[in-house]
Image (tube, rainbow, N blue to C red; front, side):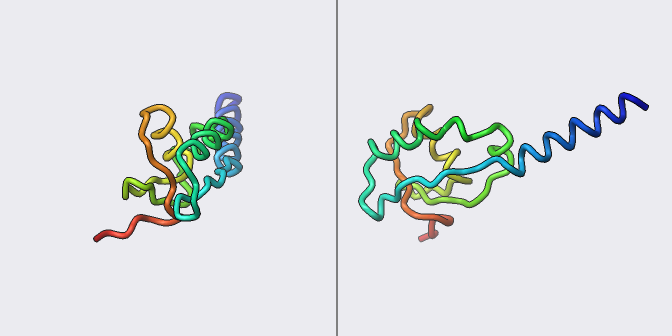
Length: 97
């Protein structure tokens, strides 16, 4: 019984953690943002990208490579850890042409 209660508390805590995981706005290339500015914002804010926010994406964003990313966190990981030279074009999925 005690183990069940502990597990329920743990699940509740993790659920609350994911609810309060926040994203951060990146500057948009369509408004003149450059890669250096985007990288600086990513480096400053990437600590806000919790593991659970990666599993619970918020709003998709369109990258300058015409790829739709789940959110700013996913885009920042691609920029910082995979070395892609991309910026955010706009909020929302990329238009298919």
